[in-house]
Length: 235
Image 1 (cartoon, helix red, strand yellow):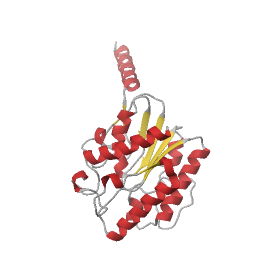
Image 2 (cartoon, rainbow, N blue to C red):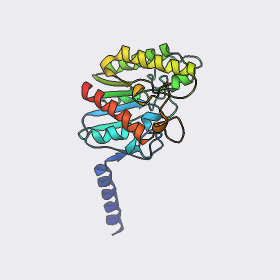
Image 3 (cartoon, one colour):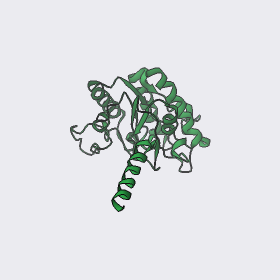
Image 4 (spheres, one colour):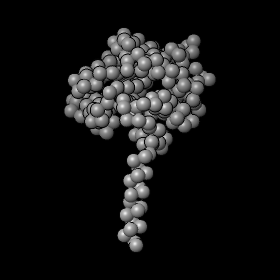
């Protein structure tokens, strides 16, 4: 009887795992990411806004909203707060002095192991905030995209910076990053800056969460609208 009961528990656990539509995200402040069917597969590489920070719940973050919108596909979110374009470089990338090493669990190498049909990259403000120049950002994004292309990924969505109230000098670099991403990646690029910026090119106060850095639910919804347009254009 005891062996039968143990076998029943094991089978019940396996069935529950098989039927579950949620997986744990990596690098989010929340516990679960809602998933749907298995195709197409979208992998997100990014930082805190992409991982859901600022939203009251992951389902209200732009990535969570996109996951719900993609009702015939699956989203795996590898984003993590504080990350830069250096963190998502491949495992074998040469390490640049005074720059972070790539994270083998959340970089392009990890993403490619999942065989995505579409890769989303959203590295918004951390590079510039850490003092890296925009040339570095573009070079790293180009490197990640080239590796993905060489490994069969054919669809990309790459976001610009979004505003952040630091200083006029830093804001100027965020604007440069926005313009360079839009110019280099063209139809694959998503403008995360203009729809949420105020007259001073800072993040609109009514769209910010309590931390004063990340978008609130309304801000995330606006970013999701931009993602949705780009996805429909590039899928």
